[in-house]
Length: 250
Image (cartoon, rainbow, N blue to C red; front, side, top):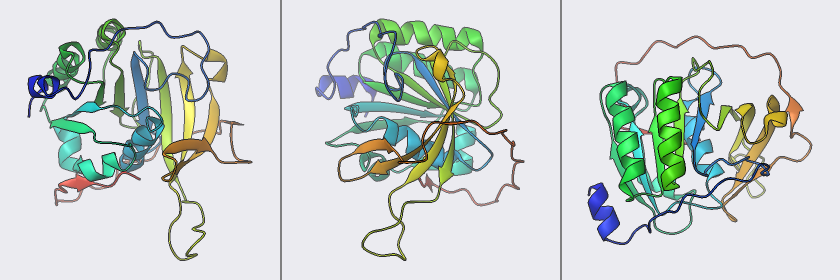
């Protein structure tokens, strides 16, 4: 199924660009028009990053998604299962996965997806993107009203044209009220590293959990919005020779 087919089947209506308000509540415009960067805190957090991205968009889920996974991520972590992605979003969501080999190819596919009018969200797993590339995608996203959520490795640094940058790591799940031996709700820690919408919140840390009954992401009582602690960048682990076809999302 290609982008034209998704559009012809009525899975998404044409989006109209709107200007974002100057102040937004948590998650500060994530999922709105523009480019939003979600970054690993340390090597090995990419599965948690994927789950957080889906959970953060759960209250206003997309109807059709173009998921662009640069080949290095697809080979190292596998592709997300569609069943896992849909577990975060109510209703039927059409997902189209594309795995370009090179970064410039991936950026081209992302821009084509945004401007096609066939999808309501583009998720992009990218090794990087400079200021010029993010500026170009930001302008296209704002014009078409299609947000771009970029999942990036822990090495991501520097200034870009993105609306915000979140640095995400996994947390232990909540206690399971039915079985103390079983995992409970998924939890993450997210640091708002940069934000154009809420610059005064930059540096804040949020502990969050996903409620799979109400399909919502909420702050964990007593743990939310602390100042950020010094970040230790993890070292890459030795890569396994096995190529995993699918990844976990939490």
